[in-house]
Length: 64
Image 1 (cartoon, rainbow, N blue to C red):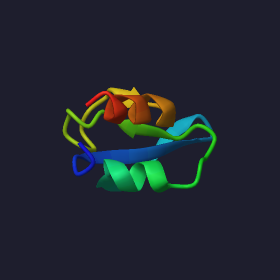
Image 2 (cartoon, rainbow, N blue to C red; image 1 turned 90 degrees about the horizontal axis):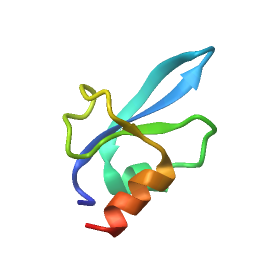
Image 3 (cartoon, rainbow, N blue to C red; image 1 turned 120 degrees about the vertical axis):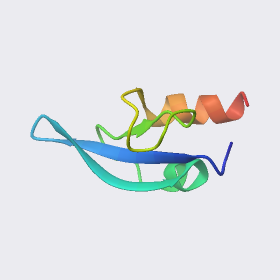
Image 4 (cartoon, rainbow, N blue to C red; image 1 turned 90 degrees about the vertical axis):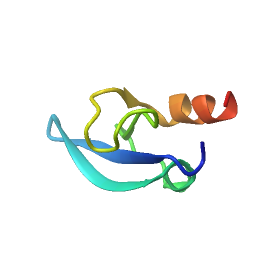
């Protein structure tokens, strides 16, 4: 699952702002940012509305 693509987003002034597309491993290596969420790796990065916290993404990877 480490190579699946996700979109990282942060919340700025109440709106979700995309910061980039990356694989799951890169996403989990990002510096922790308050409000950061990631698209679900089983969806299409940048197109899915299902967002996960860093902890949820890490748990999903650990269970795969």
